[in-house]
Length: 131
Image (cartoon, rainbow, N blue to C red):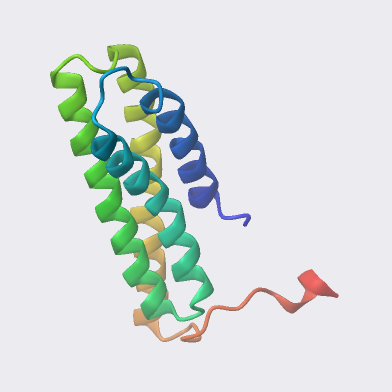
């Protein structure tokens, strides 16, 4: 998938995975929730896109934004009990901010196109990409 926000969300998952997976003494359930929510961001972007409906795509972007907030909240919690380093949190926070802003911008762009009526209700790639 070429979509920049999707690629950045995969990068966010890699960053979180590389840190969270190796924290000693971290509850398995909490690890699974953090990793699941982080992976859910890219998964919902992809699932929404593959639905080929702007309305559905926007809905899945909202779900991705919710997962983004969940990951941030859980990592703030881990930072508050000194389970993650300030350096890691800063790296995460910068990338998370980028992903979240790209999600918001994509959602707004889709909503504007949908409201203007100048765009099909179905998402299509240009046919010349496959010619």
